[in-house]
Image (cartoon, rainbow, N blue to C red; front, side, top):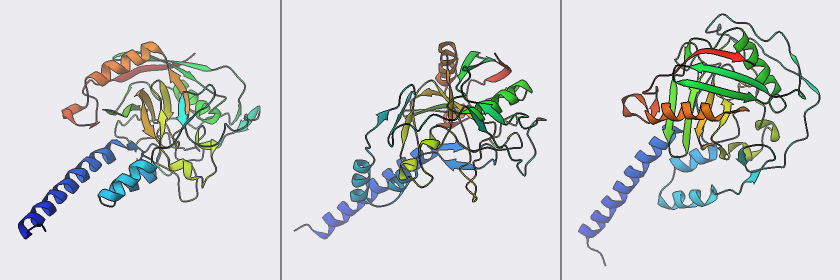
Length: 298
């Protein structure tokens, strides 16, 4: 039978393990944040169920959680995304009606919502050329998958909204590699003065489907929208902020994927990612600053 001293030592070791685990969990929680766009709210970007598993319970709960979070994945056709859940949804109609309701906050830079709201889904991919201070970044935007998103980004680019703006945030850790851009204020709070709903891959699921809280793999080379979750009325909060994925990143399927990055663009991102985060942190402004001189469509 262990003595009182041995029991105290064992209890101390258990407490030390718990404290160390909680510290690591807090680091992970901070990594799994995507700054909000239109509403300027920071939201947890990891799957909600994963966050719960990471932040409550003792050793036994943690073990169970790690086992439960190991979900199988299905590769969707023509989509560089590993995602659990149902088969792909039926193709969108030839045209969709997009809604861009005004926000309570004014735009971060003079701009108007898209004039065209009836958007075709059967057109060719839209190409965008970004001339950045660290090198070129070419994007191919998929209007069939995310017509309202692409329509908005094209409208903003054509109005010069992204010109002379900086990418304010980078996360470069194992399992999370993004550069976040699209806010003229470079604070993570700026938006275009309007918002719109999520599209692919969120629209593959029903609004209460538990798979929406399961992590999926946003692969290197994708470009997706940042957002602030949904409003109490269930409306989307996409605005102008987006993130460029330079390293496979685990997120729930609540961030609209609307295009891909070309190889020169990935080389530019790798250059910026190689500098890490300003001040040696895991999440924050890039140590190698990057701004967009111009963003041109076509």
